[in-house]
Image (cartoon, rainbow, N blue to C red; front, side, top):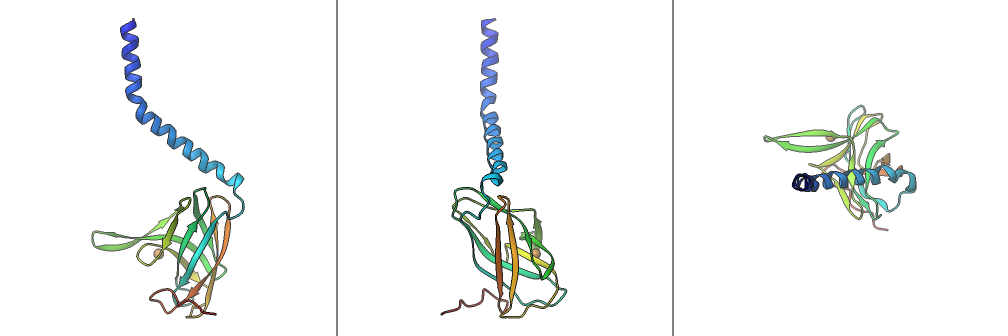
Length: 170
Ligand SMILES: [Cu+2]
């Protein structure tokens, strides 16, 4: 009996490592799920150099930026809306088998104390069904909504198309 118990104990122990992993993951998910209740204001979330490209009415516009999170809580961009587009999606360009394609992202994580870059060839916002054309010098307004409930209003500066517009000097 004593030996049998020892074997059972050993078997339980040997399985405990992945089990602990699973538990830690569950705890992490619990923390993420609990975040909305306590983090209403955009605690440390900031958009740096939002820019866009010229586009035609009815066409698709793009949105690029750097999203930083100076807070201590991980967050995620979960929705984007614009008064100038029928719909805004989060995309990621991926190279597979020599072909570049875009994948829609349900959310984009912004780690605590970290940043995520939206740039050509990677993450980007896609403004579908533009209600007006975008020319260099225009602004494309959008509201970013985060998993925490935080919202940020951003204006994407429309440049000539190659890269972000030159910063203004005052
Ligand atoms: Cu896209």
